Length: 485
Image (cartoon, rainbow, N blue to C red; front, top):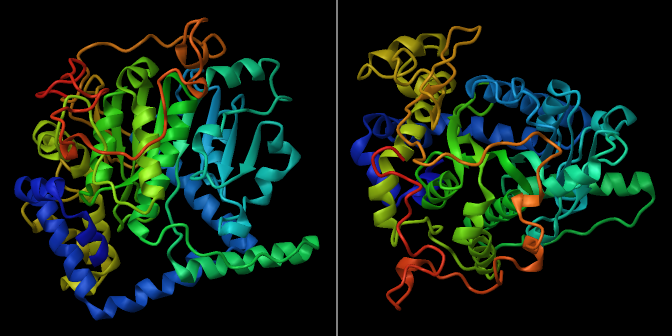
C-alpha cells in the first residue's frame, strides 16, 4: 500500500491533497495501516487465496465479481438491467474467471458476446466451467490471447449460432465493453501458482508442460500501464457508436489513471464512478462507467493513434507519464482544467475506501471492533458514510442530476451534474442498425488506416520541443467546459 502511494504522487495527487480534506484523511489512514506491523499477516494471508487457481476458488471469485457488477449496476442507475434493449452485445476484456460475463448473460437473456483473456499457461486464470457449458457457449465464447502483443488485431465477434444477424452485430461493434484486467506479471507468488495450475491442466490433457516465463515488463508500473492502454485500444476499436464502457482504475491520484479518465470523458456523453462494498472495498480500485460513445471524436483527435504509440513506448520498457487530453498542453494545464471534476468523481470512492479501512483494521484506529468503527468514522470532520455528500459510493456527471435509491437505503448515484458536454452526442440507433464505428460507406476501417499510422515512440506534448501540442490535440475543444466539464 505504501509503494502504491509513492507511485501515485504527482500533480493530481498534490491537487487532491491540497483541496480535499477527505483525501488527506484517507492518505493518513492508509499510512497508519501500512505502518502497523500487526497488519502484515493480513496482507500475506491473502496471497495463497488470491493465487489459488482451483475450480472451487475460481467459482468463488467469479461469484464475487458477478456481485461486484450487480452493485455497480445499482450504483449507476441500472444501466445494464434497465437498458431498454440498447445492450444487445458485449465484449469482456480480460474476462477470466467470468463473473462480469455471468452477470450480463443472466441479466440480459437476449444478449450475446465474447471475451478475451490471458492463456492459463502464461499466468492467466481459467474460466469457470459453467460458462464453457453448452447453455452459455451458444451466447458467449472466449478467446485466449495476450492482449498486449497486438491489441488492434483483436476484433469483436459474437457467437454466430445465437442470432441470425450476428455478422451485422459484429460489424456494428459491441454495445457494452468491459475493461477488467489488472496487471499481475511481476508478482512471483502469483505467477508460480498460475504456472502450477497450467502444468496440472497440461498433465490432464497429455500436453507438454509449460515452462516458467520471465515477466514481460521489468517494472511493474510499466506493465500495469501497458495493460490499461492495450485494453483501451481494444475497447475503442470495438465499441459501437453510443455504446457503454466500464473500466477498472485506481483512485490514488496516479497521473495515468486521471489522464485516462479525462481523455475518455472527451469521447463520451456521461461519466459515473462506482466503488463497491462487496469486494476489495479497502483498496483503491474502483470502476468508471462511460456512456454515449462518439467514435467521430476518436477519429478527430486520433486517440487510437496516440494509444498505439503509447503502448509501443511502454513495451520498450520506457515510462509514459500521462496521456494527451484535448485542449491541454501540459499536465499542469490538465490538472487546472479538470482536477476539480476528477475530484468530484473520486470523493464518493475515497469515502467508501476510508470506511472499509476502518472496518478491516479497527485496531489500527483505536477501535475495539469493526462494529464500533462507524461512530468514530462519522465523528471525524463530519465526513464518511453518514454525510450525504459522500455516502453514495458513486459519482456521476452528464445526467439530469437525479438521485436514485435502492433497497438498502443508500443512495446509489450522486450526480454532480457539473461535467456535462456542451453538445449532445449522436442519437443512439437500435441495435442491428448501426454501421461499423458509424463510418460512411466510402471510409476505410480503422485497421485499414483511416486515422493514419499507429506506430512510433510516444512523446507527450509537454515534452516536445517544437512548440506544438501535437497534431491531433492542438486546438482547444468546445466539447468540454472548464466550469461544467
